[in-house]
Amino acid sequence: MITLHHLAYSRSTRILWALEELGIPYEIIMYQRDDSFRAPPELAAVHPLGKAPVLVDDGLTIAESGAILAHLNDRHGGGRLAPVPGTDARALHDEWLHYVEGSAAFPIMLTLIGGMVGGLQEGLSRFVIPERAKTLAYIAERIGDGPWLLGAEFTIADIHLAYLIELADSAGLLAEYPQLRDYVARFKARPAYQKAVALGGPVVPPGA
Image (cartoon, rainbow, N blue to C red; front, side, top):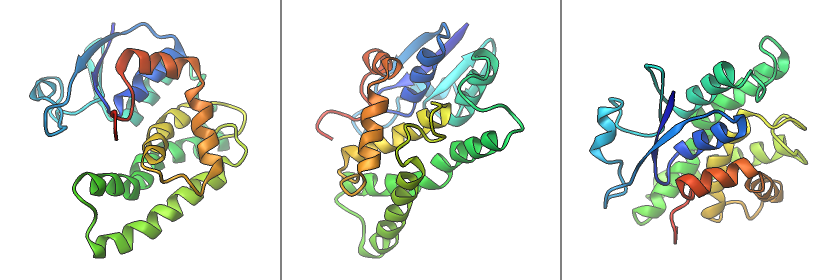
């Protein structure tokens, strides 16, 4: 049995979405954030990092949403939400899977955290603002008319990226990128995304 440990307003919405897209049976254990918007200490009993998502699959415990998405797709989804291993398309897909949290998230998350604490210091802003613009322009160019990252086929790389782009949209960072605003509208229209949000709550906190 698959168990997802899901934290409100977190990356674990990605995993709920993937489980629904792939039609995999699962159970969900919900956690709420504390007054400082941190994960509760109970999650540390599930995984030493004390964060979400955490997936437990017949004794295998995995954190990190990219690794969880790949595991679900490969072991339980017949590989249908990624290109065939060994192909050029798969290499490009996996590049995106790593890029989202490896590089793209850095300037966007710094912007969002800065907004939560009264703004970034001037020196940090001089670095973050051009890096954020370069990141969003790169993603927008690669998506183009899409509809998805790799063209016609929706993949787990789209699920991985969508969380970050939705956060950027909520912060008003997509005004100059109509391709990304259209991308947000497309993935929010997917029934599996809507089911994930109905079960686990929205990605963005109310009023954020």
